[in-house]
Length: 527
Image 1: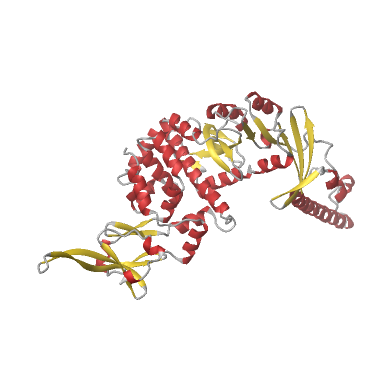
Image 2: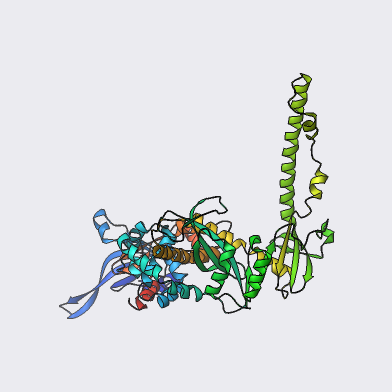
């Protein structure tokens, strides 16, 4: 009997369903049905063991194999990915409940399903029915016909959307990254869909989506968005979104890109009461003629992610100009310069050789003046005109920060590049087929929620030190393979492969919180 054997933790912590018992047989632990039967002889009830339900292992509960005729009695649903995002999005769930009290369940479940399975609304109902979210949040109407009016309802309430986004803002001393993104629109009835021109050279109807990112210690998080006409430049929308988001204030520092570094924009930022850290274009008057000819001309150096960075600071009235030399960037740009110079000189040499051969046959095509111009360019001439290779100059009125701190903050703008790469490629939100403004607004809001969830997963991957080995897509594909089986009235995680188990361990995730998930959802106020 199992009473003679000390139960290990995985057996002790096992949530035993009602009317079942655990037995220890041949060095293994099993789950059996248990019934009570009346004994007419003793006139008392006695325990009667039923059929075996499965085995209890360190990897979880493993249902027993059944004949084909009994398969219909077993229910299997997706568990891993749904449970992962449910357990990592508590704050999002609570905020949705606060600002969208009547439809928060639908919004929340749709957002998770779109992260896990993709953006298509037409498949939401199918994924909902075959996943554990349908057990945690039963009875949701998520068919395409139900989602359409839901989107319009949510999109009309921009006020609630604004409050939701504003509730995630830090109270003070925060850094805000500002950037824009173009979304193609196939709708002819969208007010903001205007023909514009973006960095991808797409001269098509598009909406300009402006984003503010809240910058943390090591990464950025999407905090606030607003849509504008596709023809509106990013810098034009800056004042409006800063005012609407409530970001204006002395405790906020703006981090923007080179395109924002004009004198008029600096005045606009200072008038809003914000601080700034903004790079300047090469050749700007602040550092022109002041770039050292060698690394020895810089004041000091530091390491950033294994790269040597040399620096010098120019103090101005009310602001600083930090000039950086990135040795890795210098190396890359030098290689590119030499490659282009070599290609150019090779082309010049071939043209000159062909012309000389033609002239030897009295069939020359170039004039003497044109032939005289076909002279290879000297490396010294090119390098002399490229003293700013590998340099970055940054203007900031955060004079309380040293050059190394400013550089670290500025480089975190790479989080925006990673964000939009995830937004476009992994989540697939680079184009919209919404037909009206309200549906499009709701689509953007759901994208925002999905991005928050996706970005949180990326940060968890980075925290685990696995960013070079695990992508967001890797995480999703692996966790989708984790299933749950229903036995009797209880749910159990199915046995998983070693590869899946290894990934879960790296992420610190245990797919065994089904009871907690059900309790959490059942304790939430009803719609």
